[in-house]
Image (cartoon, rainbow, N blue to C red; front, top):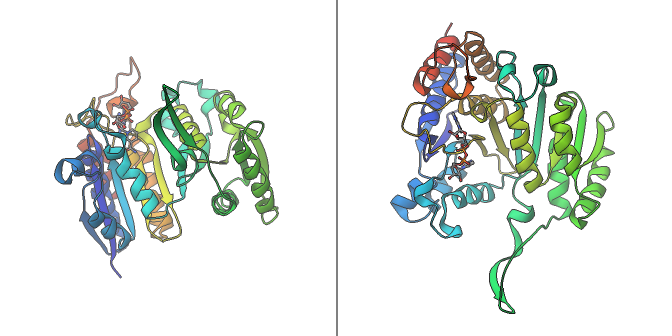
Length: 360
Ligand SMILES: NC(=O)c1ccc[n+]([C@@H]2O[C@H](COP(=O)([O-])OP(=O)(O)OC[C@H]3O[C@@H](n4cnc5c(N)ncnc54)[C@H](O)[C@@H]3O)[C@@H](O)[C@H]2O)c1
């Protein structure tokens, strides 16, 4: 059976890193005998320029019929002045919603060769291997009513944080299942001392926990979690939380590992289509210079192989190739610390190194 993969490179460095990720996916498919068919589409600013909208219905349809979507990044200063509803980021929000991708999995792992790249002391970052499971289609980014207006002569804006128990239960199950395959520890992050929404999360998470007695569950306030992440990051295994807290905490966890350019993500849902993308944005400051780090996109390919194609061996081969090139000393500019004497290589050369490792 041939699996269709939709490539949505997007804007800025998106096309550069996606090209390297595609090369790796093709090579791994060859090696492990997978049959893949690629299709490409536009998203974000590129789609706005071509069609006046950040995501067309046609691309959504192709995505629905694909096994997986491999996305680059969207956005850039060219589109910053547009109204919120037609901005590039709307394309991302829409595709997540259309595909029912409610679970965003963001691993944060410190590769031994990169421990010195963290802003924390090496002894604090050694052994960091956590997974942030973020609810992606609900909460304050989608809640109604929302909008801006003028009331009593004053400008007013509002957004609403809304979750129902089904949304909470399904993401909580995803997180417990992930914890079962790891160190069996789950931290639920909330703000239940202030938010009614968080109180409902507490209730539902406790109910789901009864089905996972082999996983230790801890409820942690979001503010103290933010502190613990920099004080004692290695204590975390799986973290589950809502959309906005997860957005912020996963970026914090990301920076602890050293570089945004190393962080992949998977977005999964009920429909069976998985969406895989690097955590970073379109990096307009380095776009077009062959300076982007493609490893986050390449590690997203490993997640695609594992979660959508169910090929753990192929996924492990990609992860090992990335670990190998880092151990060899290959570095893109973002991975080089101030006085590091290493040669800096570009995006394409980093892709070449990963391919060489894969075939060695
Ligand atoms: N998922 C997405 O598509 C996504 C996520 C975040 C931001 N954005 C958009 O991207 C644009 C830029 O946003 P930003 O600057 O806040 O975030 P960003 O992630 O694009 O860049 C932040 C910094 O990290 C660097 N960086 C990011 N990825 C890198 C990589 N692979 N290799 C080397 N360096 C890398 C950039 O050069 C920049 O200095 C904005 O339009 C924003 O809306 C998109």
